[in-house]
Length: 77
Image (cartoon, helix red, strand yellow):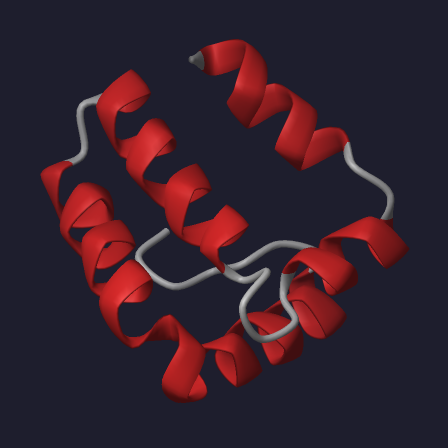
């Protein structure tokens, strides 16, 4: 699991932005869940599950903004 988290953290900027587009944003939801499980953060797991359910509506915009500013999704950091 930590390998997936490291791979996502090391992805180039342009690929992170592509992963934040609508429908594809589920990648970041899975990332949040996996990172929550790997590091024992229940809040990150809950946010990941909510991201799967609500991410396609508008949360993908939050991911794009956060990636543009901080180079990673920062919700529930």
